[in-house]
Length: 291
Image (cartoon, rainbow, N blue to C red):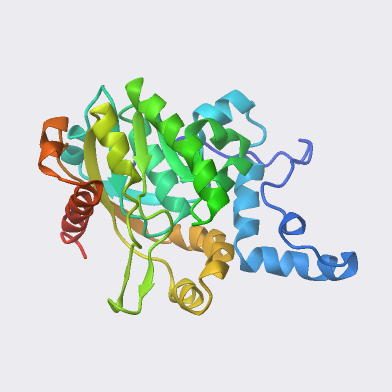
């Protein structure tokens, strides 16, 4: 379980008014009278108010402290809770290049939780995550940005992310990845909530750097509303992720950590797809302990 926190958020009204992290006006263009009418209710409905309240609560801290303690502050401020077996933490190599592969059941909460978990084991980690998260200045230094959409421009920009990931691993760092690229959703074919296809690019990073790999599995799933929106209009689900982050605060996530795989184990796989399929099976097998 995540350690007890001693940080108390300040609410000193004499502090200067901080800037919002996410403002509806930046996301949707509406006439000013209409925006002033709907802004409050819509931001509350989508969970933006919850995120902005948290961000306001840490603005009194110096930015260097907000950056170095970002995951700790976020777990506390967003009321995220998780449990992990101490024996699982002991399986994480304490040095050398390492790739963490995990399922992606929730979205934003997954990266925050794994960041908090790993910060208690190693400080040299980065998360491969959606480039939109760089809108949070404190998170920018922890992120290797990728674009989850399958467009020509996204693929071009993702090449830069892959090169950055390769360099980071060659320095001996930890790269946390969610190969599905987006939160788990209901599959009509499988009749269950599950990750989408895992991207095989991660296999090239593993083989080129000789990094060890640790599979992980996070419990849970997003709400019925999120799953319904995903089925009806997949593109629209992004707007509901902040709402799911607030919902995550009511649930304790369970994290299972698998055994580390060394580079010598990867030679038996003939293709990148086979390696990634094996890693996904390992993550799913960890999940069978509590699903």
